[in-house]
Image (tube, rainbow, N blue to C red; front, side, top):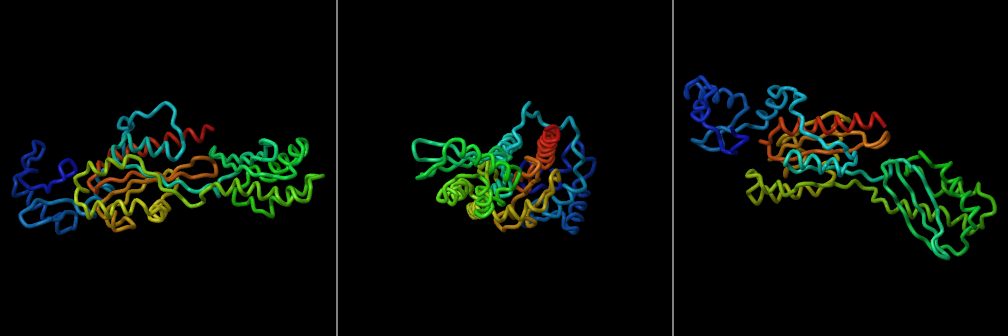
Length: 318
């Protein structure tokens, strides 16, 4: 009842439900017992009761049954495993705000590297990662190599670094690979590592928090008070908060963080359901759904489970 109305629930309201075969006095005694156990509390005198963080925790851990297959939402025929696409899907299906932590590319692996001639005196460095990101930079060179040497250089770079983490493409490592290509000028041999490194510098190596469906926050009565809303919005702009939270989950493991369990005071009035999943063999995505503590836990957990399970199956088939 409280999840639906956000209003404290009285004993008479519960006793009046057709499925409850107990008097108001009996319900009141049970609610008093639950309050003593810390599962409910009374926000003010003469009000009904509302669940505490401990009450929500007990509900999530012990009352909710495992989701049945028939409860799973209808998913698109083709799921994009990208973190941003998964975040959008979760926001659309749950009608809460979805968030994703998008890591920098430094721990992704290089799939292909190419130096290509552009115009009369420019070279384009392109680096393709295992999650289909393309990093590139355009540089002016005074003595670019002829086409046969450029092909040799590309072959040497791909032989040395394809499958390696981007963090392993240091200046010295690239320089050593370039040295294996004969007949390059000394100037270009020293310049080539800089061309590649400029492409890498297009990657913002810090993690980035991506939000989808923030308008749903303003639809929730729980966030109608401006001070609470201001603190929540402040928390949503601190990537480190969610880095520490998402680090608690292993791929495929769905976690629920409720109220004061969250790592920021601006999230004290929130519940966050989150998980990690494999985007590629070497990259992990982190996604979550944030809403009020009285969120529809069954719906969110079922949706998260269906989406991540489907993505993991697709990854296993690749």
